[in-house]
Image (cartoon, rainbow, N blue to C red; front, top):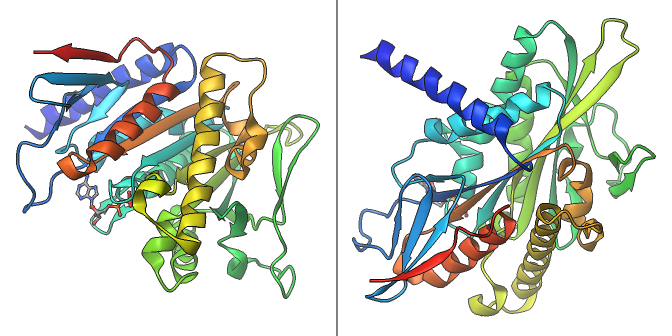
Length: 355
Ligand code: ADP
């Protein structure tokens, strides 16, 4: 039985890779539906199959949203990573790439990106995958790792404590520049040369800890900031003179819940507002790219400025929209599905049906 499984998986892997290469446009949108908790009401108003999410609006009215791929509540981390592998491969093949986890707080963004101890998510698997591909390649590569967060519109380095040479007694502020070739540089960002997965994983854990300890209420900060990981890969050509650097951003976005609905006040209101603004700026950029507009509004948020050279053009972008199946979350679920629909290439997938 095991050999059949492996063969099936390899077949699916080849199929996914072909689909990915055929992809018109470079942005794919996937949706992951969180499983219901043991004590939660059965028969939720959200149903799904491998391409569609169906929302029960009333007893007789349904709305269907379709996606490049839907991960149903019983999908495993393996299932998710299998579909994501081509994006990782594209970085070795010379593209920049970007994977986002989008959704309301509590819908599983961190579960998908970071994972839990016995069920690792995309970040550790992607990094392992990159090292494996580098080892199997005939070229030599230099790999670097950086990690930052965007909180209230400000960039914060999560690896300052790991800088080999302390840069300054007070952390330098990070600033974003675009060079003559259109490549984004983040001045003062700690960038660490790494040689294997274990080294990256240690840095990643330090970054996650730095993120959580920045506030007395860690949940609040992790859902009110965007956490961004950058892995850069420079291919040293045979002569070592031809150098080409590509990068992948792995982004756990702040919770998308609308701040006015959460009745937050004070600092939480401001934090929520900052997240809402930057997520809508991201949505505008992706939508403009999909429509091939001449002006792409990258400058409207720090998030889109940082990602300018990794979104659009020759980059591969994957948006993983997370939703809750629960009745209580239905308004936010519909908002997330609408955001995802705007991010998609073809707008025909949405239809309402009456039974
Ligand atoms: P978010 O990052 O979107 O706020 P989390 O990733 O923290 O959400 O998920 C909230 C809780 O639900 C966590 O305890 C997480 O382990 C659990 N969870 C989320 N998605 C899944 C899933 N697909 N399978 C099992 N548990 C999940």
